[in-house]
Length: 434
Ligand code: FES
Ligand code: FE2
Image (cartoon, rainbow, N blue to C red; front, side):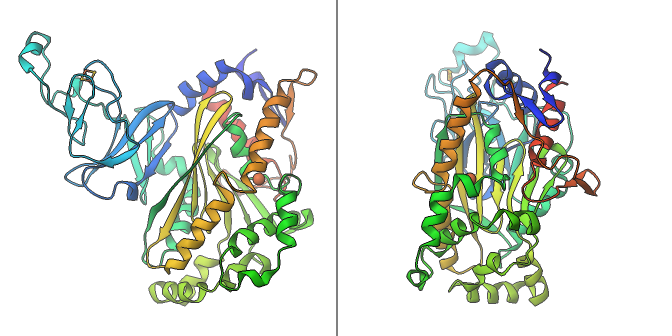
């Protein structure tokens, strides 16, 4: 079967989630070509700081050099190929390979080898890029969010992101101090299922009322008086929000799809329920800091944007108003790792960051009563798709009802549409069939 026979209008073949050969093709033609999220610049704030991650299952390292410049390198020794840096993050002005002691500077240059005379005939030279930790072909940052591409050619990061950058702006502009920093560690988990499932799920408005029923009911039965100090309110609010009726998702929630496979789900911010955050005890102090920094009109404008989940295909999903970002890391066709990060808004009250961490525990950490429902669902999808009898998965909800809001940007009929899934697979197919 040809790859282009796997995606049709309103349906995809089950092989796209199950076939290891397709996963290999995704690594080669999608993850080795598209702009892949590496990390946030605040994860390497000082010279010598580094952060290790992966692109297309290959180890890479983001470093801050002595001259303050940021670099993204393959985490591979120029000698016989060992992974050089094994800690996930840290600080060192020199990277020394564990195997034979070759050493590198923060920009990947080979700076020392033991017993150099032995390499004379092999023309190993200090500083020669051929023996360094190679620099990835391209890396760029959008307002502190660092992306890299293993392809030397292709669209710029700006073109790739297009107007989905407004979601990043929404996150950053909420900081009274004008900047954000990653803090609070990592909420990490693994699920048994294909990596594309999470991109489908995070903008899926139809599922919360089914999948998250138990936490919705528990939250609805919770007595509000226990939140008098603000603690726990954000989690219960999120669970209650999951339980708004489907008619609300149809009338007040929107879904937008962008070129290169991105999407976001958000509300039309006209419902009091969704701006309940203004009732938080810290909100007054936050609002006055934001107003002082930006002026009243700008502050109101910033807060009126209500983008919930923004998917930047194929590696991240983030929630600007809750200051959360998830990195989706494909490990194999049926295994995916997810890393959750929190952002601190510079200039915001300390209590707001505590709220951010609480929200992460509710939604992104393994003890979350919400996340566990989604993980169980991915596992059931993986199992269910192994069944014969129907090779096709339906993705047609809301089809034919999309409108083009700006060039290339589609707005779905409502927040219960599967537009983002159809959009993702159209883009997926264009990468894989090249
Ligand atoms: Fe790294 Fe030999 S493999 S020094
Ligand atoms: Fe969910």
